[in-house]
Structures are given as C-alpha cells and as structure tokens.
Image 1 (cartoon, rainbow, N blue to C red):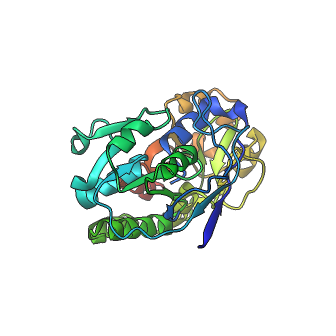
Image 2: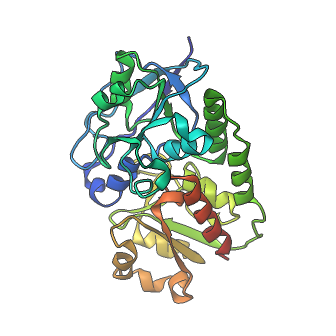
Length: 319
C-alpha cells in the first residue's frame, strides 16, 4: 500500500502567543485528502497550553492511503470540512469542532460539538457517534486521528495550500458522500471570475512580533496570485514558524514599500499595534491610505466557503 509522508514543522514557542494560537487552533493546515490509518510507529504530536502542536514533540507522520467507498456519518474536526459536508449533505454531518466561525450558524444547531476551540477532540464523544469517517487537519490533529484509527475509526487528513487543493478536496469529499460537488465548484469559479487586471504590489501582515507574511507556498499566497495582486513576499524564503510564511524585518518591509498593505484581524488588534511601529509611517501604502483589513478566516485560514467568498470580494477591490 502506498504511504504519504507529511512533515510537521517545529514551531518556536516565542511565536505562539500572537499568531499561532489562532492559526493552529482553527486548523489552517487543511491539500489533498489522504484517507486511512496512521502508522502506529508515527511520532507523537502533543498539545501544549494554547497551541495545538508542540515544537518539542512535532515529528513526521505516516498516513496510509486507502479508499472510502461511502460515508453516511461524518465527524469534521475543522470548520472548512464541517462547512463543506453540511453544504453537500447536512444529514451526514454528526460531529463538528468548536469554532467561532460556525458556532452561530443555524445549520449546525443540534449537532454534537466534539472539540473546544483550542482543545483536543473528545475521542469518547467521537466514538459514541459511530462515524464512518473523521476528517482532521494534517499536522494538527494527527495524534487524535492516530488514536481513532487504533479504535478502528476511519480517518482522513486534509491540508489546503491553494485553490487546486480546495477543488480536489471538495470533489473527493463529494464522491465519498455520493453528493454533487458542482454547486460548490460553481461558487469557487464565481469567486475567481472577473478578476480585474492590476499593477498593484502588496504585502499581507498577519502578526507583529515577529512580522509574518505569506509567500507563494500558502493558501493566502495562492489566493493573492489568483486575484492578480503582486505579493512582494511570494518568492522570499527564510526562517519561519512553519512552511508557507516568512519572517520580515521592519527594514525589509520599508525596502519592499508595497502599494498596499493587507492586515489580518487575528483578534489581537493587530492594525493598532502596527500603527505604533516606527516604520509604519514611512510606507507609501500608509501615506496613501491603501491599508486594508481582512478577517483571519478566508485569506489565512479558508474557514468556510462564505469566508473565502468575502475575501474574494475584498481582494478584487484592491488596486
């Protein structure tokens, strides 16, 4: 049987408080659907306070690829997978994560919540639901999924780093549910339709200490490319808390001097923090009032289809 190796990046503890708390807890890492049982010899991925993955224990995880013919009862451990299952066939969704993006959505009323917003999934609750499939985030919920596999519960991991990944995940999930993916695929096509030609350059800032920005190897980076926005961090490489994001110095931001800035709301009042930085007033984007704010869900973490659509609307307006 073929195997898939997925590396979990070590995360410096000093980065966790501002950005990675929300990022990992909400399940950013959502590419291809890899169904199967986790190797019992895979390394442990343990929880630490406020963070879903520990730098000290993160390691490689091996996932065997199997085929799930159909699934009638699905537990989703990420907000995006919950949203997609509910959209494809709400009757098949039996368990959802505790997430701010879905907690007030009436579609999910009465469905069992199997995890706290920043907590480990409740395995006992999940097993009691007798699911045919449990979908979790690669590199974030590996430990829980491994334990469920040991209990003979079918699991899958998903890791979305671009629009092609999103389409593939949607199609694979729909096939597993014997549902029609076309309405969702149509929404994706509409989102990417009629994107204006642009000459603008931009930087996305998702935290202050350190200054983190997505390069092209991320969902956000691919999103910017699809919106014809020149991401000045696209081809940059360097030390980073995890793949797809790079650490910038204030000097690098001033040197890049983008036409616009996109500041992500991570519930840390990031924009006001950045306004207090000495470099802020030196940028032409701030001088010309080309600073845009966007929700964390949609641009950084896909979150839900509605969140993605909202990000599409915003990014099309940036010129």
